[in-house]
Length: 222
Ligand code: DC
Image 1 (cartoon, rainbow, N blue to C red):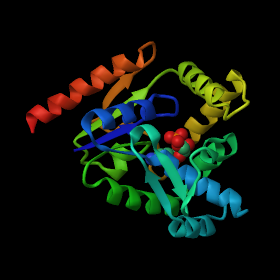
Image 2 (spheres, rainbow, N blue to C red):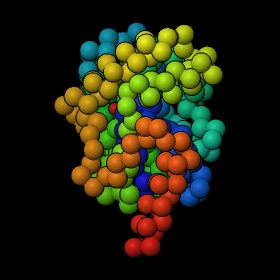
Image 3 (cartoon, helix red, strand yellow):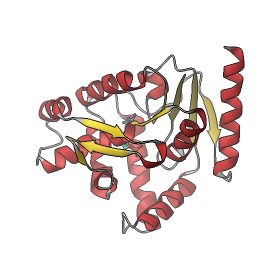
Image 4 (tube, rainbow, N blue to C red):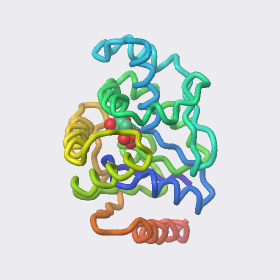
């Protein structure tokens, strides 16, 4: 079974993706972490992110591995654990830039299809539209920007991965959502057959229940 979860940042994709993968005993693939690994590689190699050919060459060459179970997923870049480094503000901003490059997307989508074809929960921006258009079930998670920023802000404070204020987090999120939704190649958009869930004012468990119900309906019809 392939489950696609798309949506903007802070919509609950990764928390719920992990929960679903654990409950259904499926592989969990966080595709955003792959674009983040490319971004980190670009920063470390001092490459100009507007040089699409060079960035694409790098994306083709680097090794990206997602290892461990859903709750303790580690991201390896050329064998090195970069799980924490890819969460910095600098990498976050760069990931949204490099993910607009068609060559980078092509390379990542190919890897994601190979990794997920035996069954997985995948989360990202283009899973239901591009990566697995035939996914068994597609979710599109949303919430109002203020609530998404607040979730991200609390997360950052707990992990102390960012020193940004709530207002800065919201501003950064709006810029990134705008870029992710308006790029020409595979923009963030709702797949025609996706189940849209607005989690504004809902707890994680409430959203999880809704998703699990939908998954069991799909099971029954198969
Ligand atoms: O989900 P995230 O915030 O970790 O993703 C980081 C960036 O990567 C995000 O700004 C958009 C991009 N991305 C993408 O273009 N396609 C995906 N499937 C996943 C992420």
